[in-house]
Length: 139
Image (cartoon, rainbow, N blue to C red; front, side):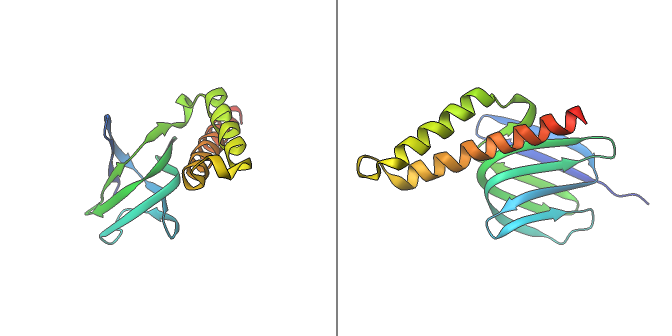
């Protein structure tokens, strides 16, 4: 019998549900991990990275900036600070945010370096996820 995953992706402003996923992967704070049907129960903190939901015929990717995931009985619940679908990422805006963060890091005396480094990581991740989506769409 084929088993699949039911996945929910929730942010403070949105909630998406997916049925029949064959796997998903997420950026755990200790490294990237994958969930398949029959996975043991799990709760994990997430960092900045890509959440990828695999179906038999397509992949849905999100650029995320932290949160939590719970896996229980082939159900996966992502509670995320932000989640931006790969195809919706405005690469011009992300590139400007990346440049702005890099500029701020050049003169650390005037800024909060931790915030600027986090902004740089988020912008770089958004660009990476968007680029992967665009390269796989053109293949």
